[in-house]
Length: 167
Image (cartoon, rainbow, N blue to C red):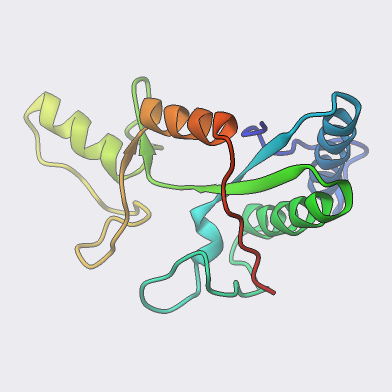
């Protein structure tokens, strides 16, 4: 299971961060084959839905253009994981994480949940200025980080699960 993402590697330049993702993918896929794992879970982001109108779900094709590099790289992770599953026979999926909150989260850099919780504890009004998914008409599930961890562990240990890949 990988929820870390790729990191910059190699000489500085325009492909540095992309190389970090490719290095991460190759390393994880090699390790999965060498250890003969039965299942591989990779982290992605709900940010892959940015740019799609209305309510979205896993069955919708994702747009190729991405507003941020990290989202483009996560789409690459999803495609690579799908192809790895087909080629290796190792049950491999991506989980699209978004809207998590938990202890020690920085309210200034954190999302909506962190700001609301910190404001409530301090008895002050919450500032939702410049927070992603902080408008009244935005809809997102907010998930406590320990519940997210439990859900991923349940996926990892389940006897089976259905995967869908849209092309």
